Length: 427
Image 1 (cartoon, rainbow, N blue to C red):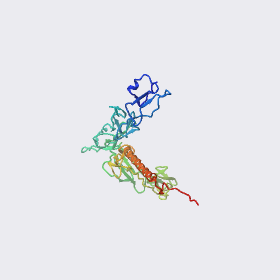
Image 2 (image 1 turned 90 degrees about the horizontal axis):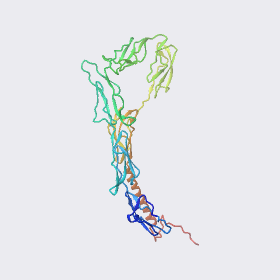
Image 3 (image 1 turned 90 degrees about the vertical axis):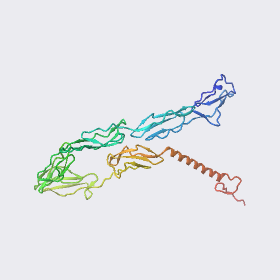
Image 4 (image 1 turned 60 degrees about the vertical axis):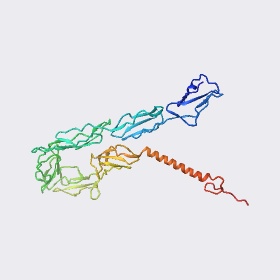
């Protein structure tokens, strides 16, 4: 019977043309396309006396494609370079593939090569930012992932009220759940905001004097001597032309009453506008804050005439969020600052010999957080391969030196660290 088919080789024309295979018949194989001959391995098989074909070692090996190369702003996934293997490509966050995401090592012109080219990763685009009435935004050459735009209001004409920017002044291009480019939020608005001149009976402004009270403008009050305040002492003009919180009132101090105790960096529990003599409340400090003795909560009692048994304020420890990103084996090449504000963008690159894993451009989100996360720099595959080759060469040289030192001194009787023998003396 004819010999079995091999995955990597086929019979020569003369061998495949044979109709019968008597004992002693020899057939010869040739490597299939995509494979090449292994030197020293026989491609022949012979029909033996037991009517079985002689066993043979694999005499063909799969040809290999060259490495497809690096993918800027992406990752190349290759586990093997032999004929039939595949290389797949993926892009870092904020980028998308342009071209095929997969190529295969195939036969081309009696050799092997990839059936496609390495794609490229383009930054995900956003639509142009939305326009706003009575305002404009800082334009950019292109609107792509992590591009930030800042809005400003137009100057008012002479005799007209100025516009106020209401909302977050900056938005940036980010990704939605389907990895499409979208803006981080709605744009702000440019509106004419005017709050009425606030006045408090039996009280006066301490800060915030002005002829016009526009959006975000704050005023602070204090009561006249002999009066105590009900409500907050600081109020701010809101976008709906009202003050928040509402204006306080100043009530006359009586023998048996107290206004709410004033406490910085803390809260009064329960909070009321007025307390009777003998009533007690808890003063509780905010997070990371405490009273001078270290306590986070104390109890105070109304003694009448707007006096409390204890008047203390909370002191807070500074909470510092280090905004500077830590990049091992890399650096910031654009946008570096000692401190970053929300919306600031930086561009990162790795040192020579390292590959960036992650986005090269990130946006500061506040509280020490970046979006996307700060990338990392890893040794490139080529550098790792070079290190491995050097290590193998050094190990081989060390082994060769040991061999020469210990086993190549034939005919010598000198005692060495490798050849020393112990003998016993005879009486």
